[in-house]
Image 1: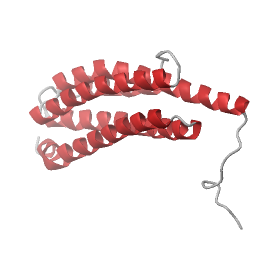
Image 2 (image 1 turned 120 degrees about the horizontal axis):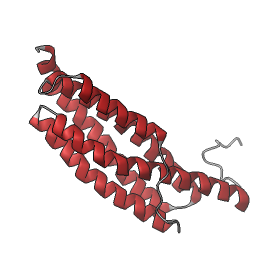
Image 3 (image 1 turned 180 degrees about the vertical axis):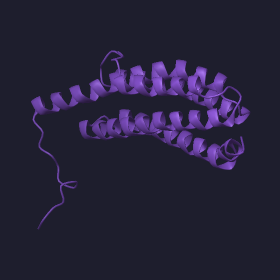
Length: 179
């Protein structure tokens, strides 16, 4: 009888498991840096937004991000590691892109808001990919509680992405097209 790879139990040596834990921990350090630096950027994006709804969405996500940082710290604790950030070039580039949109668009316009949403959704998609991968690794390593916390963050990131799409499609894109 042929068994699919996903249903087979994997015989992983302790040495291999340590390498996977190292990869997992490195990914946690990366997203920890990313979230901490995103908090600064979200404040700037909220100030730059024209739409009150978009300002509120960024402020809400800022509060949520602060909670996500605390959850990532809990994950570090659960796996017996000290919470430590590692520079994340991907998030640095995404934040820089958001700053460029603010600089290159006219203040008080919905075109700027469209650009801010675009930049924010790129960030959300990076985070969704990161947390999805980390959750999967946590499951493989047997970190059930950590996987649960990472899933909570993943769900929040998905909800934020959906909210940004709804704002864009309901009002902001239409307003921008009329400017």
